[in-house]
Image 1 (spheres, one colour):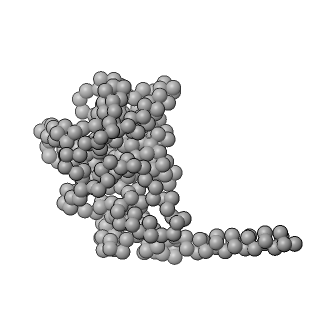
Image 2 (image 1 turned 30 degrees about the vertical axis):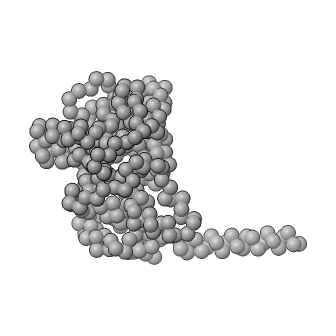
Image 3 (image 1 turned 180 degrees about the vertical axis):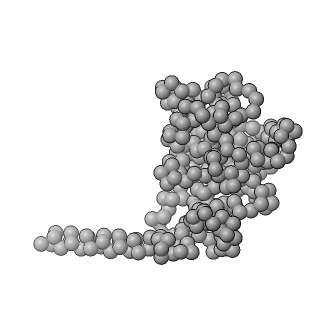
Length: 290
């Protein structure tokens, strides 16, 4: 009898906990302004409203994330130096830059001699082996670039395609993911020369494979098609960024297409501070790889 009573009490407590969680779970119908979103920041209210007015077709939850990531700001208008340049989840944009002179201190050479940070390099080599087992081949066109190399890349594109062309396709020095040692330009043919083209890699079987399996190794497509107004660059199917398996899988599972959206929901400093102030049950959503 006592065992049955204890079991009944436990079931009652579980039911109460579940009901409380459901009551407090976010629902757009109960919260049309999105104020109960875990990543909603009161200080950004006016920016949310302005960005939504200019982008009425974007769901409000994404509006909040994008604004938290600074997507609403003019490019290179309010530059902030990131405090976590060595994190595998470091987020760079046209308004977030690396500290002057930053050089990763744990880079290793890939099979072809290109440099990449240790965990990213190991993940890429494993991914390359898995793809090769299916008859596919990856070749790295570009990986780590120093600040000086990025200056040269930017100037070369500007000379050939004008400043507007450079701004749309090359990050300014200090803002490039290549300088983090976490980004790769991947091709499917060896010895590729000349400008990278969407048709060259975007139409390949290797690209299709990456879309399906890249997250399993911690890589994301950094500048996806149809999101140029969010990430600020032309579509680059060859540019893949290592963010760690945990983050990459979460983005895949929750259909988060851009790193901007993920950053605005989970990694922006003000969002992190808010999430860490929430109940312990929310802590799992702010895990980062360092």
